[in-house]
Image (cartoon, rainbow, N blue to C red; front, side, top):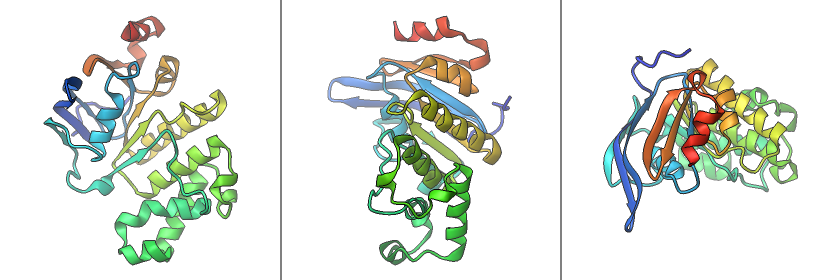
Length: 239
């Protein structure tokens, strides 16, 4: 089990955010240690996506702060989206190399002229998600599960300290979804990256996560090790 008393890889400190009159997040505080996998649960509209987008720098919270050892360097935080966000006409390898854009001059990205070290890293990331043999294939010829694994490989190529995943298995069949979550968990432990992954399915949180943080109406209503929880405890989150 991960030591939660290590210096956190990611910490939310009294975060608040509103959309008009609606409080999407209301005084949210919790932290995630290096190598810890947190499942973020809650019904639709509970604030999960807003929290992850703020952590990724895709929106600015109204109040509070997000802290990580690399604060200010967005390359240390990677995000996997529900909809993959891949470039269909490019190969798997070219999509994974997009994870290296923040480490290179813009012209390299425009011309897709990455150096040998970046290419070797991208190949290693494809191998890690079991898709090295698909490196030259266009991603629009792949299944949904394969595309999500390419998106994960791209995030790993960024070499993040924190990996955020917003409903990464929502559109996948159970087998493909379980594969993606196992890869997230294994990469979390092997690379000591902190993972915060929003999910709709409590059973997946119990199976894959070290810890569960649940939101309701923008507030934290549960924060506990998954080993101390059961299906009934998580079902109460949605009442």
